[in-house]
Amino acid sequence: MAASIRELDNIDDWEKEWIKYEESLKGLKENEYTKLMAMMEDYRKAQVKLQKGVDMQRKNASAFATSLKRIGKSKSAVQNKEKIFEMTDKLNSVRGKFHELQQGLPKHAGWFLKACIGDINVSLFWNKQNYKDIYEKFKLKMMMVAMACALFNMFIVPSRFLDALFNGILVWYYSSLTLQEQILRANGSRIKGWYVTHHYLSILVSGFLLIWPDSKTYQLFRTQFYYFVLYLSFVQLLQYYYQSGILYRLRALGRGSNMDITEEGFRSWMFKGLTFMVPFLLIGYCFQIYNSYTLLRLYQHPDCQEWQVLASSVLFFVIAIGNATTLGIVLRSKIISKRDTR
Image 1 (cartoon, helix red, strand yellow):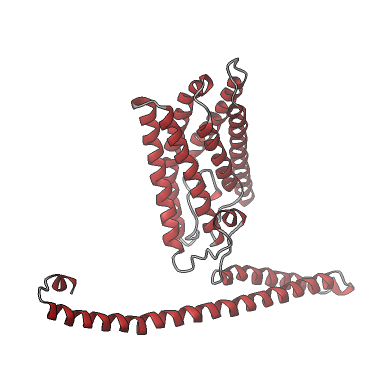
Image 2: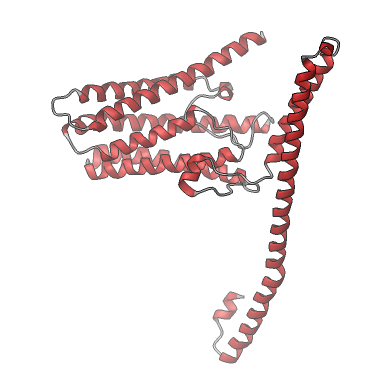
């Protein structure tokens, strides 16, 4: 229709088409728009009703748990031991169902999101999988950009301005990543513990490198930092492709959640054929400790006057220890679980 309208060369014909256009626009508002607004209002009312129901059932479950605990301490507990265990299992099963019910309710921002965008509803009830895929593609693209920028700044146009631009991009990347992860967490993604803290610390490290003046100590550390970025980007790309394959197979087998994501570390589900990643990760953690050691030595340099040197050294060390400790905990728990199943 748009093509035929463009070909109009008579004002009377144009006016006739315009009248039809206004009628169709009016019909769109009176029909589709009105229906959509009514559905949205029904959706809001249903959410309010569901929230009240969930809150009431939580209170009832809590009351059942309190009374069952009291019964378990009574004199009749010995005779009813099996029944008490059975009721406890039922209570735990009911509590697990609350998580499913919560998926239909508004998701409120955590403290980090509140500080950045305010206390708004961040529910992704209809398009969670799409948002997760966008998040994964964003990470993949930024890994490739980091590698390209590092190579360009190292070998083609060494410049403090371009270094600052690169570190500014890293600050923006880790900040954006953290915001997206908080939204994913609010919508059921199992991003836990250290991997969230890791990104907060990475924002600080990138920020310190961004404002580090162009001094002798900066130039002494610059090349090592770019080699570190190249290695880290390579490992993350390698990890991304293998983790994506593992997650796809786990979801196909019904053993994984659609909201599981690739992460910059080692998780228990990665034992499904991905143990070869451990040496690469350990080398990366050793590189982080080496960065910390180099920066500490530079802080003792006679020409060093920048506080960013010591601050970056401390952060690299904390990140390395956190990564290594998390990896050790995951490996230990998996080894113990394998030993117990024998």
